Image (cartoon, rainbow, N blue to C red; front, side, top):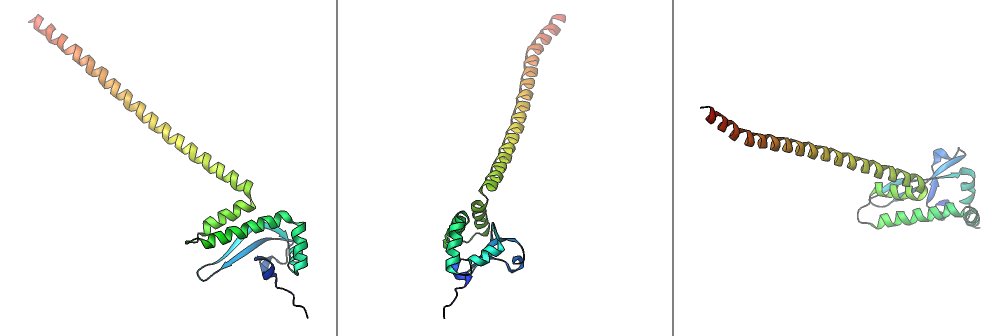
Length: 167
C-alpha cells in the first residue's frame, strides 16, 4: 500500500482553513522553532482548488511547478529569505515581512519606498529652507544694527562738534 505524502512535506506554504471555502486565497508560511512561532503571509494569491490538487501528490506538485513557474520561483525566494532570517542571531519579524513583501509585490514596495524617500527629501528641504530664512533674518538684523552703529558713530562726533561750535 502506497502512502500519500502530506502536503506539508511537499511545501511549507499553506492556505488557512478559513479560506478553504473561497475561490482564491493567500498563501502563508508558518515558522515554528523553539523560540519563534510566527505565521507570515506571502501576499501571493492562488486558486484554492488548484493548490489543493497540487499538494495532493508529488506528481501533481511537479506539474503545478511547471505550470506556475513564476509563483514557485517567488515561493523559493521566500523560503530562502525565511531561512536566512532564521539563521540570524536576532529574528526580526518586521524585516522578514518587508523582505517577503518585496518579493511578492516589488512594484508596490518600490513605489512606497520612493514615496517615503520623497517625503523625507521634502522634509529635509523644508528644514533647510527654514534654516536659510532664519540665517537671512539674522544677517539682516546684523546688517541693520551695523548700519545703525555706523550712523551713530558718524553722527555723534558731528553733533559734539556742532554743540561745541555753538558755545
